[in-house]
Amino acid sequence: MYDCIIVGGGPAAVSAAINLKILGKNFLWVGTGSSKKAAAAELVRNYPGLPDITGQQLVEKLDEHARGMGVEFKNALVSAIYDLSGRYAVAAGTETYETRTVILCTGVSAQKPIAGEESFLGRGVSYCATCDGFLYKGKTIGVLLFDKQFEHEAEYLCSLAAKAYIMPMYKNCTITAPNAEIMVKMPRQIVGGMKAEKLVFTDGELAVDGVFVLRASVSPAILLRGLKEENGHIAVDRQCRTNMAGVFAAGDCTGRPYQYAKAVGEGNVAAHSAVEYLAENTVSE
Image (cartoon, rainbow, N blue to C red; front, side, top):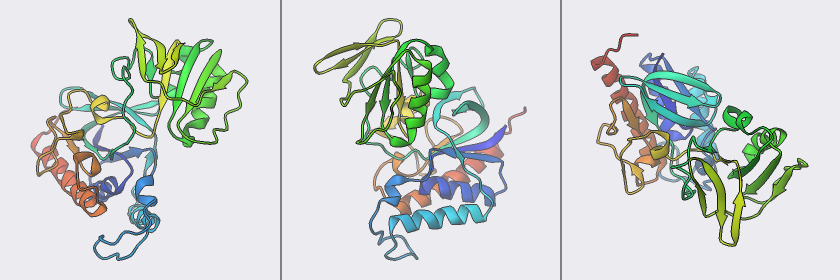
């Protein structure tokens, strides 16, 4: 069991990981890569000590710092976190890990959940191709692709399904599987009875046996049931504590300002708060 699992790859997560390493904790750092938002910044002028640095250079500096300290990063999508009363189970890729504390550094996303996505999660809606793809062997599926990096997962799903409707939310999708049909449109809703059965569009409906939503991150409220949000962000106090014992949050996911210096500071605070929590709550294994 880990002392802590950090979810996310941006500046807040880097800061949390560095501080947990310094504090000698046994932790796992997992996410879907470093922050693309940070890397895309043309110029960062308000990061103390690094004036007029590009976003890409800042990301490289942060990653270099972490690697230099021997901090390892696991590239995997965290699809669910389960409250096990005193500890948490974190589903990342095809693996599940147990931890005493969690630090959420998931950032913010412009991609809002589709109507019905949350209610049908686990009942025909999945975020993980390798975890649940085998359930749809020989069936018809819809695949919502929000990032080109997940095309290999969509190809894998095509190898299992009888028919796959691929809906890329970007240009130049390269999937060529013979049973794949590329649809350049976004569904408005997922509907069904006991399980997801249809994708609803503005101009019609599409019958499916299951829906895979492949995006870089999962909404915190969906990721961890019972997590309190305020105005679309994770609600935290000055110690970066959420409403759930042992769960902390840092960075853009906690609200404005969306700035790297703020994210790094909160990552530091969250790491120290997690260590304090561990000291006060010894859990026997």
